[in-house]
Image (cartoon, rainbow over all chains, first blue to last red; front, top):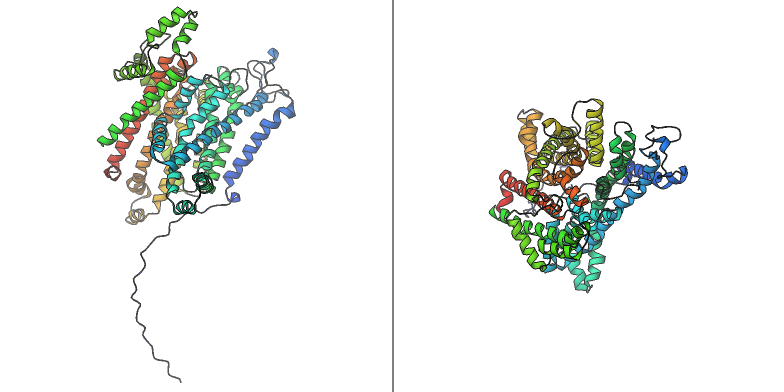
Length: 299
Length: 303
């Protein structure tokens, strides 16, 4: 039997261990098909959009014709979801209401996003007194509850759908300025931005090509979550009589006009209310999914 | 701490300035609105301008406005002639009572939903609780308010739909607002709890034999307190805004209703006063929240 080779002892390496650095656990990004809630939201929103866009075309109905003989009727074969106090078709008005409320919500967010984005980028990148001024004004605007800010802006602009949209947008703007500015100020000190500056990029190029793409995901996630809020706020202003004015079919205004008939004809309130809830729910579900996909760090 | 308190003074000044700019400068001349309503002679217009000090330069007006605010003089309503400060003193308690009740309801409901969801993470209980939370955020306050009236007032006749006075009158409006805000509270509570529940000290607490409820109350929930407190401060602003709609739905007196009526009638002093006071209340609440935050978590304020 061969002798087993002698066991050689090796010296234990005495090098120092590298400093322990825990690897941060990042939330895993998920593909869209792994987010059933977001898909449900997308389908619901598609449905609502179809109803608002195609409903009036397919049924050929008229939201504003007054039929005195069919006031406050419950659901019938002619009016599937009943009529209001002027005999107008509630289903038809709800379709047309979507054509007002949906764009108002969307455009309000755009109104907030575009100036907010640029102000935030410039303030965060420039620093100095520009930054100080923007931050101070933003802080003051954030000291108002947002609906109150919207009401103050309405008091200045006057009532109306467009003004309600602008008011909701301006009221939301400080949130965007704050997020963009914080991100920009952080990125402005990043190595890749310094490198870009050394290579000779102009400030505009650095802002647009290097900083903007890194700020965008957070801001898109914020905007997606804000659309639902904007639809609710726009409708709330109309509900208070400060947005869409009476003959116009708009969800908030419909709820306002129908609430006097809650006992006899609850469908005047319930139909546009349910449609609005479904819309906002769909947008929120989608927004949650989009946030998880784009910017897992928020919340 | 004193620094934080003094730090709000510029914010108050900023709020006052922004309101001054929005109401006095941007919306033009209240006197011309008044004069137009009274028939519109230029003599009347000039007289009103002098009466309200609108013929003076803007800087003088601004200083006069600030000194008025410092003396808690918010002017008089253009229509009723009533002192705005007195109007607000009369209306504010109703709104504050409503907002406070709603916040209490929202926190209670949000905690229950959030805790249930976090304790049963990934099960149907979690999904149902979070579903309720998203739904709560998505329902317009006007609709939930009217649904509550329809169910509990018109159908069941348990609670009064409109008016105020008794605590019973508070139930429905506070529920409508609380539902809307409980959703965001539930989500935050759930996320915070999930972060904490697999920490070592929770495992120790379980290992030493505490029941799940004791673990939750003594150890896990404490860590959510600062975040919850901050959120309550933010939600209070949402309540002050939501009160505008809720007070209209339930025909209640309050700051929100006063403000909307003032906007509809272009009653500038009242708009100015109510917005100022609401923003000041909101800032004050958030100051209190920050100070409470310091108390619960002294590391925040050391620096």
